[in-house]
Length: 476
Ligand SMILES: C[S@@+](CC[C@H](N)C(=O)[O-])C[C@H]1O[C@@H](n2cnc3c(N)ncnc32)[C@H](O)[C@@H]1O
Image 1 (cartoon, helix red, strand yellow):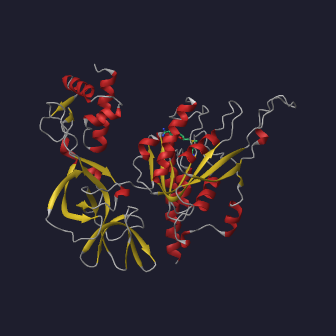
Image 2: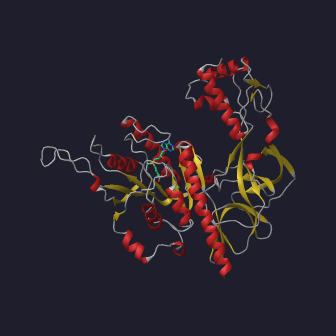
Image 3: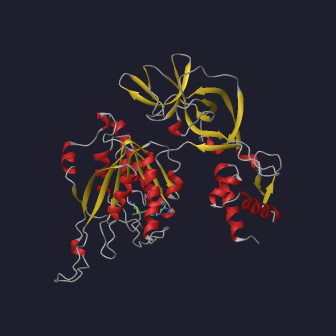
């Protein structure tokens, strides 16, 4: 029989091995369970070994294994072609070695190779000096993807690529460095994942070694991500989101699939403050955050929208405006307070707010050609009173956005091809409208049920769009 803690630790190790192909280090387990000492973890590990749930292999890079696990079955060998500069371009391709990596770190198809990284020009993309990047060979790439680029005939460099009017811009992911502009370029592949090497860890006399290699999968956009907001946002690179739009749980006791919506108020604010910190980190300078929130309720009169605004201002985000989303729901009202008497009457909120914040600067960089809002739309949306009915087709969710609300925010505040995030994505309204309007999306929600609905919704829209493109090509 396992104790509750032993079971939790075993589950955590199993999950890490499944996700990363490596067991977590004792330090990582300690951090995960918020314990103060590694020796407590050590005791639990020893107990799990005693009960034959774990095996410990002396003098092996990965010291913990599940008893039934075949450790290297999921590894694959790829060529390690040399060192690549993430700073100034240098000549690359040196000796030909090979490296073993988890199969999960490469794409399902295509040829792959690895390069060691030198320099710090890609640090904001999570690629550091000494890392190894896994590259999928391909001659083309989309704007904003990280590629191995051959320039000036014999120099290769690792940068984000952007097509410009007269050639290409190779953009470092490090605000202190300048981009390289070049007319000609040969793309030698795009970065699929990053492998990081960690040092050994010795605990007392025992030989526990920490992760030999930790594989960090490169962040992929246009994915429905099911999981906890803070855990999943941590995977989003710095300065990579142009517009975040969300409606968090309001903490009013709504019946969500997988979330308790009635925390203590301060606990709720502290939790969301961490989400806002992450939001600021992932936004590009000039990036916007549109936060939908209801006004003061008629039960407890908590001015949540003011508390959120203060949190953002404390974080250094600029409060740009508030949009009034007038829901026109007064006909359905059920609460008057002291009816026909001034003793204690209620104003019933028939509206919600969309609070708009920006990071670091007012302007969002982008090409005028990528601005796709029409004149009529601009005139209409820039009047901050938006009359939009709440969504009627709820798709099993208690509070989905109406698509019109998100359409207006996306068109007004972002360019085509921009990255749009909803970290409390629900049934995927933001993702769906992002696809419809030619933006990339990141959707996070903790409920597998809502994520499934969101995925189906995005798949249907993508299929419809492909059909339209095929039809257009046929008629041309
Ligand atoms: C107000 S709803 C968002 C609805 C969404 N705007 C839509 O159009 O469907 C808030 C969402 O937050 C999700 N949620 C609650 N706690 C979460 C957490 N810790 N991590 C990620 N999502 C969470 C809930 O499952 C719920 O879908």
